[in-house]
Length: 386
Length: 84
Image (cartoon, rainbow over all chains, first blue to last red; front, side, top):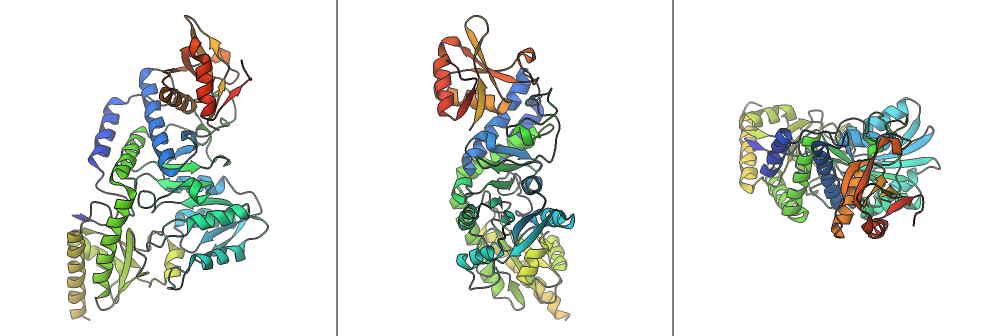
């Protein structure tokens, strides 16, 4: 099997991650923050070590600003719904995943907020940071409270200018929430450099951890309404959640095995180096894009947006059919619309959807060549019967 | 701001306890102090000593109190109740 679906979840996990999760499942008996016996305290230390690693990696001011969530989607829901007040206006980009689009749309449908979509010009070769910023500024209203957008698209590797968007939001006193679903572990993501108020991160994609944990990295002054209330291990006599992060936002027991695995995943990423990962993925991207572009009737979506994700469409072959045929030949790719309706609309994806190939650091150029051979064969076979 | 620590209460045998807002803040304090060469323990605070119920504290030799406070202040911890 050749795995090219790292944008959905990374696989295989590094051996250090697997070993640490197994060790935790057999040896960590306690529930962090729920007592002071040695096992509970060891668990609390393990959580803290992961927070400290994440704070360092993402530029949080302290480990307390790192909140564990059930995943990136949960973090985004907390950041979005915890930020807005009735009557607020929200801005999102036209490349969003449903993890951003749906919570914002749901709030609007309930009549609580209004929102606008700003253009990224992702499919336009003349796109520029200035045009994106002008598009945002043109949509800012007096009641614009929040801008939430993806850092890197899960469809086409386009990277939004987070630093400039953050600066613009700061000038207009708009809260800035960044979805780093496809950039954490692939690109430098830094709360301070981006002037972000919150960054939402999945644990199981570029950070190479297990599924079941994500991170909500909070700015120094970011306060959110809570979405979940419950046990926190401290101030148990109070009716309210504790006042300070992270416990304020972490009701209930945390998934310790996933968290210790995430810490190992982050350490692995740092050992390899984000720059090295990025360069390797770009090399694979250009190799695949170059070969696909030579094939008749194949369209690479945003053919200059190098990165960890490449989507393509083949005339006359629906994406699901292509992905199923590639699966029979041992390749794991993802077809369809990738939970990103507005992004595909922006990119003009045909009704049959697109095939997405997403790379990890373990993928090789030989694997890319094998994939392109398989695509070429499939196109030849299919067109014999057209 | 990293957390809030409370004024030390002398336990027994020259050991002081400073209440800290949460287990995460307590672990952070322990980490900060270890980097300054001061080794403290994180313990559960006596609930009868707090108005809010379950809480944590750091435990350290009382003669280190001034150093502990200084190191935590430099790391962004706020002290509740002023202090010496």
